Image (cartoon, rainbow, N blue to C red; front, side, top):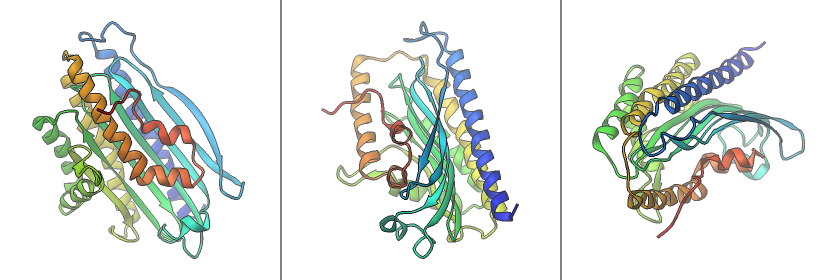
Length: 292
């Protein structure tokens, strides 16, 4: 096995391991709910569904696993992993680093979106990925979308990611926070999607240390930091009562989430343009949404 193939296998195995850690933590939270508006409902459990893809030429191109839970705390949460490969379509290859002259690619990653029953509990998104063309890089991050910003929650979420970044490079957090603020922004409404987090891309050949092991270690720590950043916030608020007015506000804020993911999200574009599973790609959309 070549170094490149061994690295691919290690990355793919890590994303699967991280998926299992997150799913176990979220199911534990479902079990812990003992009071509150939906405590009488049964605790949710993830259901998994495999999928396979072909690339634009019709050749086999990998696939993935959807893990979806609809519970009493998590109204809808998906934790998806995928490993896909093949060749980019010519019109798309020119937009991907290292693919203009050689359109072959390999990509593996994890993607998570959680929409909560309680409007007091913020929604969240996290993904990390490894992409290989004639170049190789990591990307990802996590961000928080509360229905109403709550400064202690924001500080905790950012603090967990800052600690993960500072462990590797003090320059990472301010840079990746800025990227997140700029990326998760709705230009047509001139407003941010949420309260941010971190976002990084091209960590490797273009913007990273040039050391695959260091970049992979950072990517792993970003994934683990998500659990530390988010799970305490769910536990902090999941027993609180809420009003129907708060729930309606939640539906409107979810509308902003839909607008961003369908108009601007690069992951949505990448998945749809590379023959990904539509159900997995659109897993990010909330189950109950409204516009005023």
